Every structure is written in structure tokens, then in C-alpha cells.
Amino acid sequence: MSVETFSLQNIDLSMTEKAIRHFHRQLQSRDESAVRLTVKESGCSGFMYEMDFVNQAEPDDQVFTFDDINLFVSKQALPILQGTEIDFVTEGVNSNIQFNNPNAKAMCGCGESFTL
Image (tube, rainbow, N blue to C red; front, top):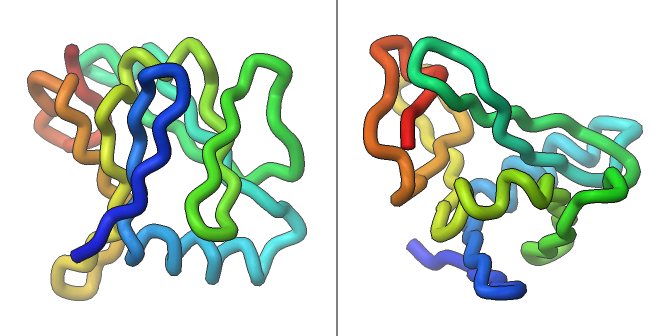
């Protein structure tokens, strides 16, 4: 599996080819042109990833480009996401975005939130 990595101001994020293809397919069928990722305090473990399809970045977003996919990331989330690989995983009949975050120490039982 190959992974495309983009580094900016010592922040490394990567996105697998499967994730790039998934987002490309999703954006082709939507009015939005980019993906926005942030982390918010939520869930039973403390933090939760939140992804939205958008047309423009928020004023505090950092822009990462993987192939032709623009990923807007909240600057507040950058330290938490340092080193994270974004993947698209299929297990049986289920497919989902998976965040391989080296900063996450534990996941909650339902898999929706994580702790640092």
C-alpha cells in the first residue's frame, strides 16, 4: 500500500490511495469541493473526529492537498492529528474512514471517540 504524505510546519498527515479514491468519488457526487477535518471534545473517551464536505476553508484552517483532494484541517486539531494516517477500510460489508493516530492512547468501546 502506498501512502502520500504532506508536511507543513512540522505537521505530518498522510492519506492512503484508498482514502483518496473514496473522497474523490464522494466529491464527484456532491456540490461541495473539499473535505474538512477537525477534532472536538466529545464522546465517552474525550475526543472525536468530525469530517464534513465543504466548499471553502474556515479562517483558522490549514490546507493539505492529497492528489486532487483538498483537506482543510482546523489548526487547533493539528497537534492532536500529528502523524495521523487517514485510510478507507472495508471489513466484510462495512466500509469506513479510519484514523491511524499515533497520539491516540485508547479508543472507547463503541469506537467513536479516543483519548490522548
